Image (cartoon, rainbow, N blue to C red):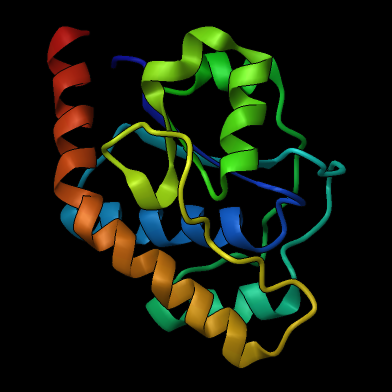
Length: 164
């Protein structure tokens, strides 16, 4: 079997936005029967081994996604190099990915700009410290964008599978 297509979501602490995006995309891909894809997340200021926030875990349940086993991890050059597609939740996250690896430019996108890889624009607001309702809104916002992007993401996965 060929190496999996790897998608990396990047936020700050890797306990809210990027884990919710990871869980949402996993659910969308599973619902489509898409396999041989590794979906990961990391944070530019994350410590290792922390769970997703309680509210992130709850919000992910909207789509029957399970974040209960999530463990935070810091963004590293190794993760950037491994990824085939990278989404930064804000322009700052994109800039940090590119600081670690300038060659990642063609595979790194500001989440709300995909598939345009302009690193500037509107980010996904961080719900940390806010209400469950705010987390739910953030999860649904992420899910809405992923729904729009899904065909393009699947096309990229399939293109790599044909090349491998």
